[in-house]
Length: 267
Length: 64
Image 1 (tube, each protein chain N blue to C red):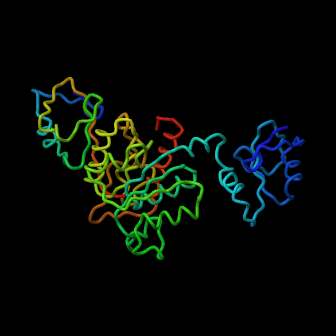
Image 2: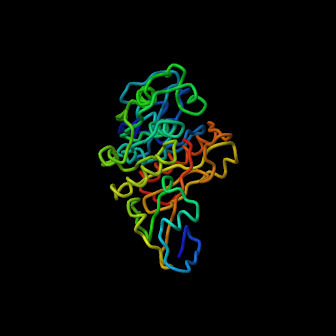
Image 3: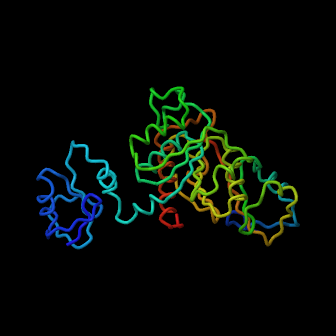
């Protein structure tokens, strides 16, 4: 029967997952069947997808990509590979969202930020001491290459203004607004909704402090505009920004972007 | 009219900018959809609201 093994169509005369493993690997190898890591033997059927992974061994490059995506729900990988997302602002939201989208294999990312990494970023942003002083665009691109070398990452070290929104963001499926200042959020959302009528925007508002994480949610406020956050708690004197709530909010944004790339518009 | 899903009664037609000021919206930190269309900021000073209008006003707070 025809099975997909480590990303390749393979003709094999096997009825169970363990038989497949015995045939191509050894007893210690892990088996992922259609997105789920199995411990007990299972029957396999025509077109099933199996990853047989030997721990501690670097696979060949052509097998690595399919192994990395083996835990995805089946049939999302190709859709995500075609996805084009631009992330505006690479702070606590943007740096974490970029890494999440890279991990799930979104095929084309554009990362936009004008700033460099400084020490007060490290309490919530996805950078290391070794990145201090480096442009955020470069620091993040370097990390993503180590996480998923199979996607295209473009960067622009530039400040986003009303004048360059159209030039920077046209042609993408989704714009992720991940700025810090409310005036910048408003500027990008207004300009993009006016000038790029076919594009979806996933924005954020309200993730400061340490109120309940359950207050952070995703709301579709307009046809093309989704907002993630508690919609109230802004960063201000006496109320800081910390990794947990910022990352909860980043997770909401990344998940909404994933849903939009899979053509699901409901929150 | 309806603002963010809630009913608001206008006693007479009102300028959008006046409505925003009375309700303490900061024009630099919001986005407005009026009757299903994004309202360009350049038009805020000309728009007159009436009781048929449906407004969605998004207020952005800082942090990211």
